[in-house]
Image (cartoon, rainbow, N blue to C red; front, side, top):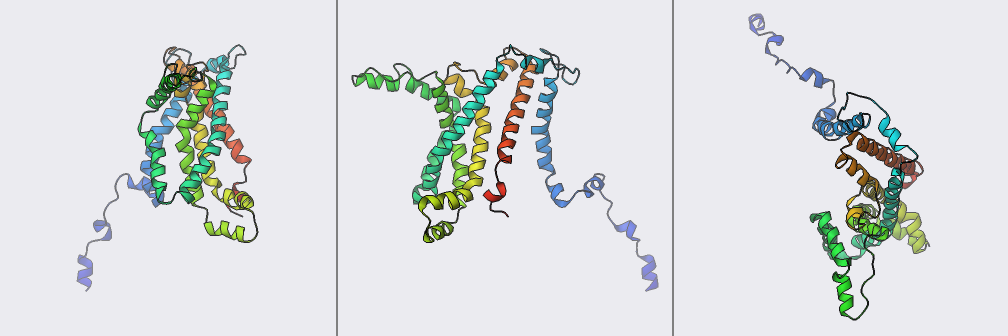
Length: 307
């Protein structure tokens, strides 16, 4: 027995040596190690471009001296009282707010029907709202141009019926708002469907059995329980609508200049990447600030049912 113990190799000789990078990973938890690919993807695909945009916003105007120069001239140009770029900010945020308000009214009844009323046809109805997303947004918007343009589908059909033709609605702010509501309806609809599907029907039925009216049950029970889905849809729609540009260019005919159009012009025709980056940074700050301000005024614990 003593001989066998002497002849057995030492533990240090048989244990596998750790890989060179395993010591650094050993300080991370198992969940953090599994999430490393996600962290890497976010760093390369999100953080790095964001850092580049912020760095460009402090570069010399009309140059590509990123990380080489530092100046506030781009922001001074934006905040110049003679600059009308703030009208573009106002148009973008106004369109986004009205789009969210209209979609909240339009999407809720459709979502309620998908969850509670359409039955076996709910899947087909959902596919009908998803199907337009498989077609390019510009193609769909130009389709609306062909429909509403003079001597187009609507105007020509009404003239063929002996009328004076269709209304002249193209290239107006109302048409831009219509295009945004049409484009972003799915992004508001399906989070609302998710929120309504999480509402237990027995809770609503119990409220009705206890004497609540249908309106009271909706306001006090159903709407608060569905609010997480509604909030997700509103935030997603607002962010997407604030960054929209195709609707104003195609349906609005550039009669209204939104801030994303100014950013595009700065990066393309003007070749002033630092100014475009400064506009983009301000847009991100404004949208982020408004979103945080809205969330701070909401009692999320009450909405989510926490105490």
